Image (cartoon, rainbow over all chains, first blue to last red; front, side, top):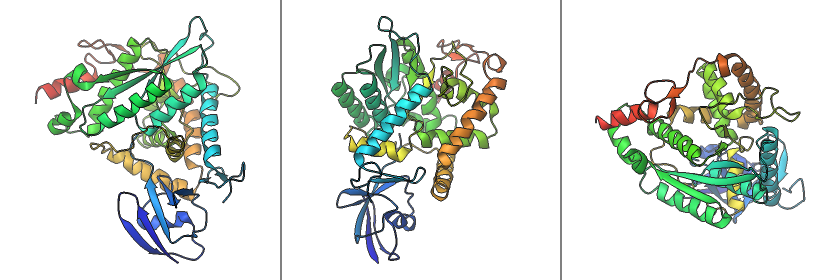
Amino acid sequence: MHVTVEIAGEDTHELEVDADATYGDLLAPVDLSPHEVSVLVDGEHMPTDQPVEHDHVRVVRLIKGG
Amino acid sequence: MECDKCGENAVLHAAYSGLHLCESHLCRAVTKRVRRRIREDGLVSDDATVEDPETWVIGLSGGKDSVVLTQILHDTFAEDPRIELVALSIHEGIEGYRDASLEACEELTDDLGIEHVTVSYAEEFGVQMDDVVEDDPEGMAACAYCGVFRRDLLSKYAEELDADKLLTGHNLDDEAETALMNFLEGDISQIAKHFEASLGPFDSSADAPTEQTREAQDHHIPRAKPLRDIPEKEVALYARFQDLPAHITECPHAEEAYRGEIQELMLGLEENHPGTRHSIMAGYEKLAALAADTYGGENGDTDYGECENCGAPTARDLCRKCNLLDALEAV
């Protein structure tokens, strides 16, 4: 499955992932931890263990200093 | 995926608990755990009464952690006449960074009706962090200078505001990183100090994480970290979902290389072994209580007096802040 991963304010990546990949599986290839970001589809936050159902996601960094 | 509590769309999978939570139940869970921590640590003293309330000073930077802490403390204690909240912000003199986060502090404290005091390195010490970074007389990271200056002002103004406790927004990730760093550095007396200064419960109760309580200190206002059970990501999501005016830009001088290494290690472990951060802290708190029993209180090797220059509590003739200011003056 082809997925476009847009990292808010940064780069956009094109990934090929397995059909049963989860939203969390999109993060390791772009060198991000699920504990520092949230994955959004159409503005909605997705649990990282949810299977990918959309071909475009937006990733926002949640952690940038206290 | 559905929220395990209500069936709405889940926004988070908390792998350490296995729960899927929606916006509303995530926020409720965060608030509940902060209140439980306040209760377990015995933060509300029996001496706090309507006639003689306690003053809690909150270190408010305008970042997500301190903004969330301030909001939850307000929601919990606004109607409780035993507790008075005051927010204390510090302007370090970092162009394009702190001005925006202080706006967030002002917006929040105005909305909540909380007294807000701002002090600056420029007015207090005659220095700005942007210049300190340029001069760097000790060859240290910016955070090493800034941490000394910040702790000095937080303590000084907490004292001036007649605070009974000083509360900061350290979250689970911050505390587990500090625990790992202290452990890997083999610094048992630092672990004891961590317990006595901010981790140890004020009162022993059946709910407290350790039977041992912290020793009363007369050299520093006691500190507490009510967010220390909440993973950093959940604090950030709470701020977003509650639409709080939190400022999330990273400090342009941030370069704590070792902490960054530890963070990467810890988040990697958490991903492969969910619950690692919680178990680090559960064990560390018990170890820290034992360390405090041996190295803390009257058994400690630290004999606090007053800085010859500024009067701040220190074990040396001159406190660390005055030493650094002298070094900057000499540049």
